[in-house]
Image (cartoon, rainbow, N blue to C red; front, side, top):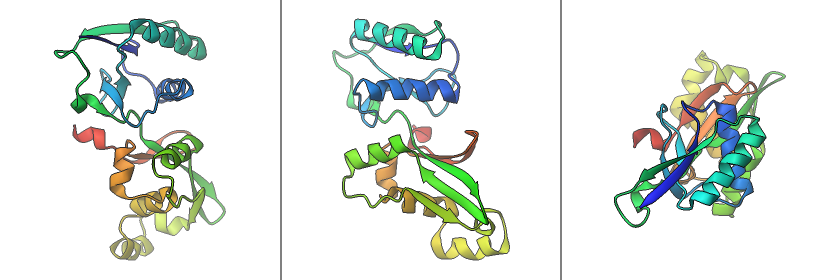
Length: 195
């Protein structure tokens, strides 16, 4: 069976991958359970697998236009079966939490598209839009040494409080990435890394 991905030569930068995911969501694709293949040159990223070449070409043109980069192309490859197997299905991207410095602490916010994904799949989740911790709990300190044995890692606590869902449910949605305002990754837990 012939299938297709839309890609560039070499791995995508975070900004490009975000645009890729945004466009998939904009055209109505639920990125939490899709046919996928590893993105070449990366360890933790996936690309959507198209079964229709015309749709893949249209997506490549639109993505290239959004990013002002005409180097996006359709890559064709063969799957050994007549359908996309369940083992190549899964989430494409993690949930995103943004860390923002605040007076006397750090505020964490669950990105809007991540909130939408959680609501769509877990409508009873008790999400918080934002959550604040004292800087001394985030930074390595005596306070953190006492905090973590009682409540688990700071990152796991932030993830649980903001998403309102279990670790397993977070993993089913693609894991989670905590980034600072400049997009630098502070912490990530990606189930795809183990695949």
